[in-house]
Image 1 (tube, helix red, strand yellow):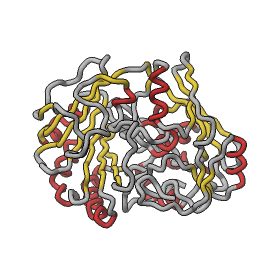
Image 2 (image 1 turned 60 degrees about the vertical axis):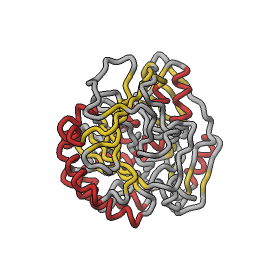
Image 3 (image 1 turned 90 degrees about the horizontal axis):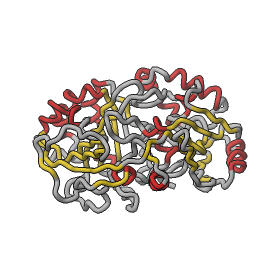
Length: 414
């Protein structure tokens, strides 16, 4: 069994798909080591183990909306592509989605997956309740406000198998997506935070083919909101659809050209109807303080010759702060520096080292589920002030270390 990108072969072939909660509880209680498997969209060993992998896709798969509380009860294994249309049909929405709608809810929340927007938090921040099966087979539920809650949503699959989530909802809304081409690099240095604040969700894409310009700026604006700063920021408005990677077929990309559409069809970069390519990319991402953008961006441009050979595209986004204990966005407005690499790790490693050197002075936190190097327990302890609280929680919920793997030990999480 391999992950989504095909760069990792799991250490076990024992994959279980229980069809009831009772079967899941018995399976977990009998296992010595177990890890939950979502959509497999992780690029490292965060969920790998030599014991048993458990998928909850075969459990009952339905959502229930509580209109009075503006919440939805959802299966953890459901994907955002499955959830979005159902919520929209009932008049509800989420504030944010990731680039791909094909990822599972529980997996995305557990690893700190995020979308974009200076006012938009990570996907885990929409969770107001979580249910999981613990190592002894018992079921534990926690709600927002419970003392342990900030450690249970974004937990890297290290506490239990998440079966259900409760999500905070917004009334449904429409977005219109426009793309600006060839925005001058100097604009990002001088007005980058303002540019990232110019719509509900904003992403900057570049290959550094021309270091003096950003290939494209994708802006997703709420139709019902007051317009942000207008203009084209020194670039030009795209008059035909484009792909995030310049020159590729734009067919899989979500609709552009300012045409309004439901939130779940505009927030991702890629359409749910298109299955993402498999095995042709690796990904790395580092999170630094948003206010460092004016320093980080020129350094990226200056050092780009050292990583362009391995780079397919770089994406720059903003993510709002939260208070989840293992969140890369814990207590700080964040700049996300994301690299989509070619699939050859030997080519990627020197480029990755160059990228990590660029962000090193800015207290970087790597994406838990992507490719990074030279990070260990001391770095985790330094960057996550609530780590000891999480470890105390893990000691209570998983005293037998049923959900611990080599990755968690290496990172100093468990």
